[in-house]
Length: 278
Image 1: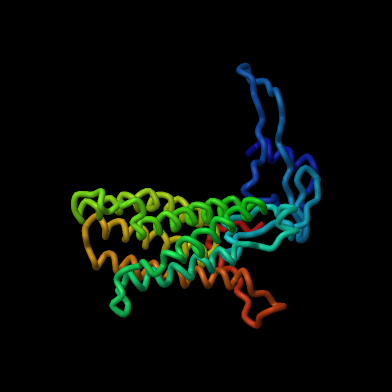
Image 2: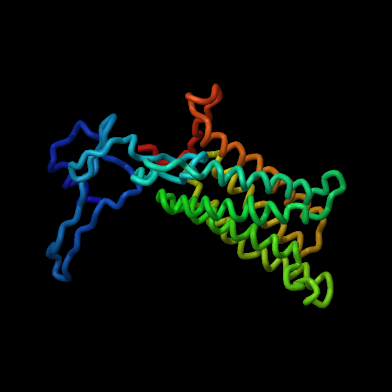
């Protein structure tokens, strides 16, 4: 932006690189006759340890980068709440994985088990209530993407438990088994779209996080297609991705838990090509 270059040059900071981030760099309002009305251009620069926004110094360690262990999908400033409270994300990922791995195995008919009713309690509490609580805590510490993920998936798993319980005689309300199967597919359909939107927000994060969300999207879309088509093989394929998403959830949870003070094996983020690191 020409206005940004001019503002930066005005400070004669040729030895500084411009700070490239997802921050808005300001605009210049112009009247219809071409005259400038207001200049709101900001100056962004950085050195090895600090970031300067309009010459206000901010330490770089006060910014969080993309990381699967805390479900950060991009660079953002650390909030005061995040400094004062523990990170709830590993607990949410573990709750998700504990249920999802078993659900995937059941959908693949492991050990000839074909019904997921054993998971009703886990869907209500572990992947339901726990994820809802984690979503609220992510709201408190200012992690928007994690909040939207845990709150909605907590609701998803809780509501799916009601489907398995046949609460209110849902299945009996349909004329035959095929109509009921189509209604379950319609239930999955909005989650196909939502999980894709979540996945698309990880394309500038880390490989571990974006792969996790890809597996989540795949298992939901295959469950949906399997219900629409009445295809057991498609449903089993969805079970594979479901189990895989649980394994990846545990991997990201461990990445958020392990550090040099408690483990010999610390997971470092493997950034995607366009991830913002400054």
